[in-house]
Length: 292
Image 1: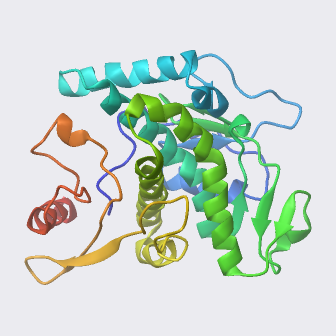
Image 2: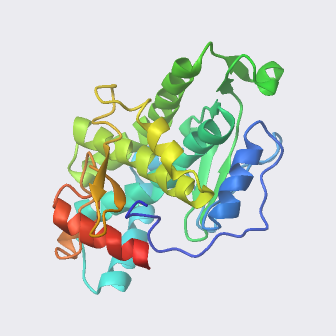
């Protein structure tokens, strides 16, 4: 099971249910196993939520006042959680993680559960992170030829599984690319380092949700296919490997392509997938997590 989940936040309103769409069932299953995130789809004539903590991804991508307000919440959260201030680039890294982790699930969960890949320009996603809510507009999606949804408006049929995996990469890049550009200057990271973070968010988000669904091993196998390494603009591969526990048990882990910088606050308490964590420490952490 992955070491990182969504950091501090209040569980989502589980009464919220997405409107009917080709990916609504996937989002309902996601919320059922992870109530910390609910996804709604406003009606076509209905405006996206505004105020009350909601922020459109397009505003985050602009890198202006909306991003300032977004990161101010993260700065306050760090002080509350750890009793100290974090460097501005660390705050920005935490803020990006808190957005990108659920944003990637908008794409990877329907792919994993339904073999449907929605597209989300940044204008089509709005986020309220204190309650773990997202509002999205699904206008187009890719699917396979034998999908019953292939004849629906907005469907784009691709010929085979590999083409669908390419759609996953393209959909995440289309959405996260502008967001990374907005966060990048605050994080003092560019290019490969930012896309390494994107790679990690794709993998660790779905890995965690699949664990809750009881399908962790399938997710590990399938995530290696769209992210084998050297698939631009992403940096690194899914990076899964196996360690052996003290009783001979198999302990799945992975090698992250980036560092979340948590060590700057708690150097003695790194993630089990952190590049700074040696295998002996990983075994200790993973064994303790399994026992709990």
